[in-house]
Image (tube, rainbow, N blue to C red; front, side, top):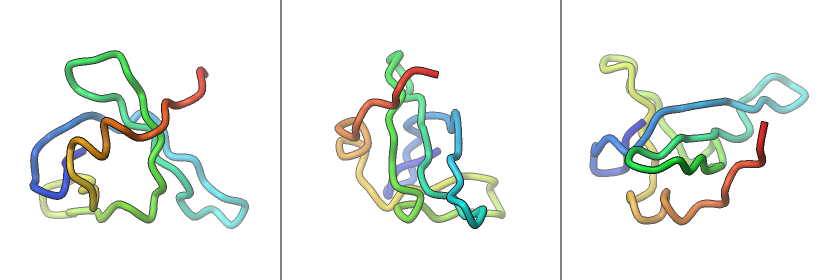
Amino acid sequence: MADANGILVGGVQKVVLDTSGKPQTVEVALLGSHAVVVIDAARFNYDQGHNVLMAQMEAHEIAAAPIAPPG
């Protein structure tokens, strides 16, 4: 997963779907830490050519996202 500048910031751990099967939130494990954060799925675009999920956020905004609940 990359930030808005294309910098790799973490890996997708989990995608939570709503009742209609659409992505609701994405849990991201941040590189260089043990933190897993939760980000609204609407804040992402998928770059199919590079198989990368791109956040419409800067790296510091991603790092400041709420911590994912355990499990």
